[in-house]
Length: 228
Image 1 (cartoon, rainbow, N blue to C red):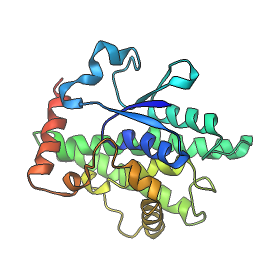
Image 2 (cartoon, rainbow, N blue to C red):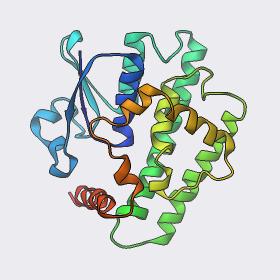
Image 3 (cartoon, helix red, strand yellow):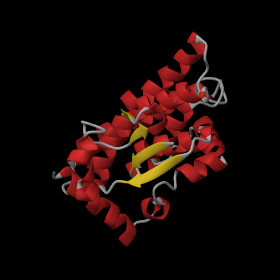
Image 4 (cartoon, helix red, strand yellow):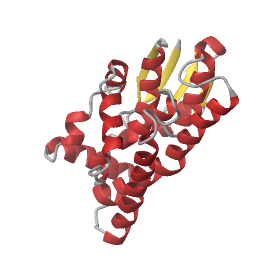
């Protein structure tokens, strides 16, 4: 049994989708980021960095793993699923996983801060992160023009990138004129395990897509986190 400590964010969804795709039994512990539960001493014992997601593998002597990409690799190696065993195949998956960890996630995250959450609008920062996000989307589109999935077969690399790219509207980054990326987004979004995973720990889709009170609640919560 895996204990999953998570919130409804792209990084959180990376792990819940992975667990659903692998069919691994897990128990969800929802972390309220607005209340700073991720900074409480008990959670810092699991992840010293005070971020979600994190897991504890009860079958492995209560072994904790933090950092979403590291969790995905751990689960892939534990189950033998969603990552090839051969060195070259494994490397391809990890390369595209690191592309998300080092590029797509940080750039979209900063776009979210300046486009959605920061109380003052600083257009050069918004432009910087949205433009770089769009450039990274173009890299993905170029790869997907020649391959159904990023590393050959469907893998944790696809899950990691998809969980971020699917939120492009929230970051203010267009996927127009990127047909291969759009095809990939739609295909992965139709997978039943993916649909289940993005509803963990709660279904935030209606809030993210809206501009009414629900969206305001998301922004307000994020602003409170930035100020602490």
